[in-house]
Amino acid sequence: MKDSQDKSPKLKRVKTDELDILSPHVLTSEAKLRKAYENATPYPHGRIEAMFDTEFLGNVLEEIKKNSKVKFKESDLFKVYQSIDLGNINDDDTKEFPYLTKLKGALYSPKYRAFVERISCLPPNTLTGQVDCAANCHAPGCHLLCHDDVIGTRKISYILYLTEEGWQKEEGGALEIYNHDEYEGQRIPQPIPCKAILPIFNSMAYFAVQPGISFHSVQEVYGERPRLSIQGWYHAQELPEGMENASLNRLKSTGKGEDTDGAFNNFEGIRGDIVEDEVLSEKDNKFLAKYINETYLSKESIKDIRERFEEDSSVQLRKFLKQEWMHKLDKSIEQADESLGISQTPFDYKNGISNGWKIMGPAHKQRFLEFTGTEKTEKTSANDSAGSFLLQIRENVFQSAPFSRFLKQITSLGIPRGHRGRIRRFRPGLDYTVAHYGILTREAVLDATLCFCSGNGEQCRVDEQTGELIGSDADAVWESGDCGGFECYIEADDDTEDGKTEAADEYNDEDDSELLSVSACNNTLSLVYRDPGTMRFVKYVGCRAPSSRWDISMEYEVEDDDEKGE
Image (cartoon, rainbow, N blue to C red):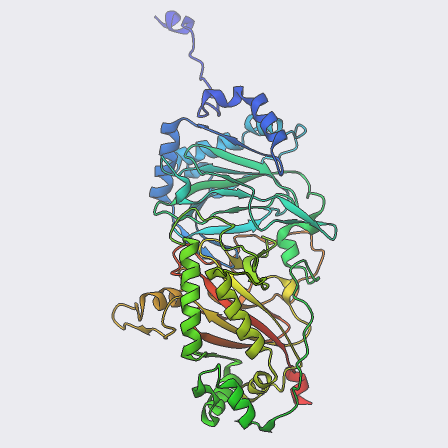
């Protein structure tokens, strides 16, 4: 019996293929995928459909939902819920995350990395085994604005979509790809994306990570279903060439860029008609009273505003324009938003663009419409009518000598030496500005922003029991900040220098320190003293915003603190 047992054949342990979770067609489609990647414009990118065994990927999704915790993160660039970092999963976590462990093993296996190199036209052994991927959830309203993904040694970016079946373009969440223009030797992204890739379940989008070239964004999730995905990167041995052109490094550059405002314009007749610090001359009072709520022109109000501004370096003046002006503006603005179709998704990036309204970029720094004036025609659209009203207010009031003297009295900053400004429209689901070092000024400025949006322009009260805001629906939505549209002031890092080779993490929401946040509020003038170390941005206006955010955004050249002390 013993001899019989010794002679029996021994069973060999069969090693399973790490890539057996892939759909059979993936590896056999190598030539087709490579050709599509090579021919893709405006930069190399591709897409693999029905990538994994659907049952396996369903188990991955359930594992993420059941075992991982999410962390909400928001900055000027993004709004997202980050979940589990697959790089932190090790052999000890196999029992808790068996499917994620297997997925990670497959994606970063030598065999699959070699496959990625071939379909991405890379030489063999370009990609390292560094694991860099995490599960993300873009809930309704979440987004990631235009950037190029360049951080460290990233070489190929990929997104594996775990969305629910039947995703429609009306739900948003698409991967948007941008073409570029040339500006002073640099490539800058156009304000409107040229292509959109829907986040279809069990598909993977991937592209080459190239400094100043691979511009893309994650469209806001318009619908009610979350956009779940695993976002990751394959790394190379060395940093890519041209790191100084990386979008995040360019945001940290203090050099003047393609979106820089022009020089300050001088006031005319600015020194006359000054009576005393807290009193307007009769002539100035009469002129300003044609436009401004007369409450703000009294001696008592000027004194109160001045004290508040001296204490906080900022002040907000509600119901600033007289009602007769607001009646005209409210009507034209409402009609313009109705013609925009702001309740319909997906949004057309060209909506609202006209002879008078031009779209402003580049997309990695800003996107909004600016009113630059329009030729007179027999029939003026509601859109251009609103712009014309705002232009009249800017020219007659904000650029006038009486208003400069009014600013001097309510801020104690002295008479402004010059002014510059824009008339802007931020459309829901489309527009924003991003904080960047190119807007840092050498000297202090006074920001004066007159905002217009839906709502009564009232400050909401807070329900002590529920914590909810009490006021008109539109006022409450804007004040909550949930739909964006607020203007935020942040302190720039002191140790940032041009030419740094390592870009910051685009999902790092702790890079800068918030100093002030001003909610969008109808017919409200915000005055903020901005010193040379402060940046500002208008947060992306979400699709659930009750209207566009319109504003007259002025900057005034004023004395800084050192000058005032001399």
